[in-house]
Length: 463
Ligand code: URP
Ligand code: ZN
Ligand code: ZN
Image (cartoon, rainbow, N blue to C red; front, side):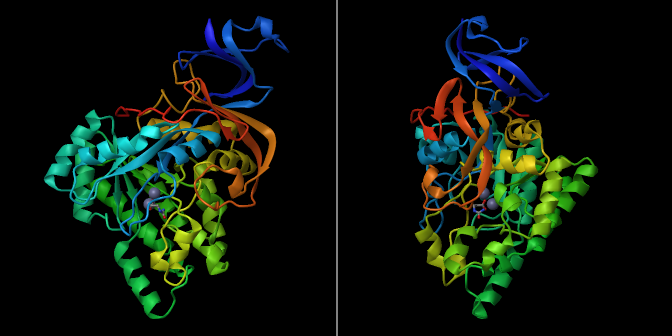
């Protein structure tokens, strides 16, 4: 006797799409029974306490968003607008059942203190969650503590080459070397700090202070240079596995392609904003333009094209969101000085609908999109096969996706705690109509129906 059978679904597995009855027991996928007959009557279904008729919709693996910033404090006193409750409710409704957020070491604090604090913040989470650990100083104590993180189920670290928490090249080298030794992976935000600081000062001195100049301060080569540097340093540091977050442009991707072709363990992520929005947003009025101030900034249409190709040829393995919203009023603080605009955009709820709709238009299959949005991040970050896939024994984290449901995205239909969406007015073909976490229904028809605190911390294993 199963707890639940989902009947009449097109099940998106890693090997292909099968018409099957999917049986769930104790929160796990217990069986995937391909449908033989043309039309199976409910009486022929395996015995189960509950049956859901998928009505021919696709059953996708619950999304794994490997890049969110929930409840993230900035040095100017602001905090990202979504905390672990609102952000994970939004995630659930949008078809994401696991997020991997960034616990951030305090300037004078330990990694363990940061992990404890972030787990406390995450208590109300409504989807499952893991943590990357952001390292802001590579002193002996921190390097030693990296091993303690592994025993806490944290198998990935985050480093920044910009912002207050940036590391020097020496520090980055030490973190990479230690990580290679531990078998973990280091994720890196790549931009050249010196160049963007100099360009910023120059722009401000010339009176070029409007939001659009944020993008001018940090061009594509600023990113490409930093990606190249990180790849060279990681190769020197015992060929440490490295994951470059939020790639936006050809300058980055071509370095990654080259390193990968030489067998370096280099992995790349991009985000829906870089695939679907472009730098023409910076021609909008300043009040609109502030919404798109993020780092790295939006790039050209040619870069977008390059990113789509990189998804198709396997150079980019993951599409995550970098969800880091601030209210419009907070963004507008920098209307007259772009350096005062809190960086970041929306996406935790929009990612799955956008990627299945736009990805298919760009020639990606359901199976390929499922890999980019769920399977690959789960594999890279030690959650697979528990998460990110539909197979027997995996958590029953599932999304029923109606390919015929057309939705125009507007901020008022979303659950993100912010008064705009970067994707306002975009129409998607297909939408999640039900999300299940470990066999429990979390969201239905655009509404959250789950419970606060239903999410669990996912201890991760070394890949
Ligand atoms: O602008 C962005 N991306 N803000 C969030 C923090 C980061 O750099 O990922
Ligand atoms: Zn970043
Ligand atoms: Zn980020």
